[in-house]
Every structure is written in C-alpha cells, then in structure tokens.
Length: 160
Image (tube, rainbow, N blue to C red; front, top):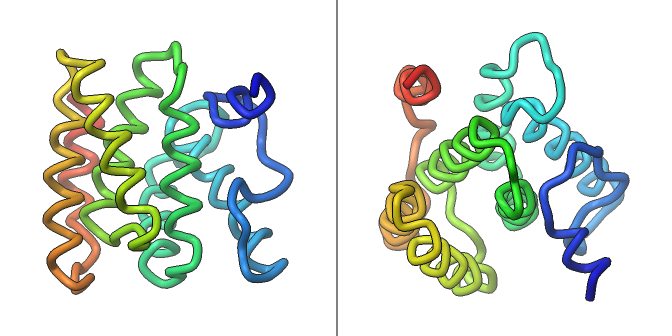
C-alpha cells in the first residue's frame, strides 16, 4: 500500500508509463508526455513556456478520449500531498479547465466526484474543489459539446 500511495502522490519525477491501463503503446507514450506537460504547467519542472502547455493538454483531452481518465488521475496525483502552494493552485486550475473541456468516463466519474467531495471538506478554505465539482456536474450533463475554454481566463487566474 505504501508504494501505491507513493505512486498516487505528488512527484517531481516524470512517469515512465501510464497510471492506468491504456489500449496501445502510442497511448501510453502520449500519457507519459501528458504528465511531463502537467509537471511543466504546475511548475514542478522547468519549461520555457509553461502556460502554452495548458492549451496542449486541453487539446489532447478533447481529441483523445481514451486518455481523459489518465489525465484526471495524473492531475489528482500531483494535487495529493503537494507541499508547494503555487503548484497546487495551478493543479486545481488545470483540473477545473479539464472539466470545462471534457468529461471523465462514466466508469471514472463517481471516483472523481467522491474525491472532489472529500477535498471540498478537507480543504474548506480552497474554493477549487467546489468549483471543480460544479464543473463536473455541468460537463457530465452537457454531452461533451464543450469548445476549448477561453485561455485568457486561465491566464488571468494564474496571475491572481
């Protein structure tokens, strides 16, 4: 269980494989690249243009449905036991924008909802779990017709 907890806790290290079972090796390779982008966006690894990584991540989630749950789990991993408040806020913003852009699978939806509900209670002073929960409900019932959200808003959130 300790190795499982460590596997699903914040890390500065890149992944060498996906956290979930994916249908093909190209999907696994893309999942590894997605995690690097999440690390870069959250500031856990140095990248020249971290804010451009958000758009890339949203595009992948929109275009590659089989990677969506992996992306949610990778983000949850980086939000779990994260000791850096800037990184944590960026992770919550990213999770919110994922949920504005694409839904989790039906199989993963309940897990994500329970995790967000627990975080809402655990992190009372943090508004993001509640915002993500609202967004989860909104996208779940909108049949995935979402366009990419305006990234100006995302950049504005990062600056605040």
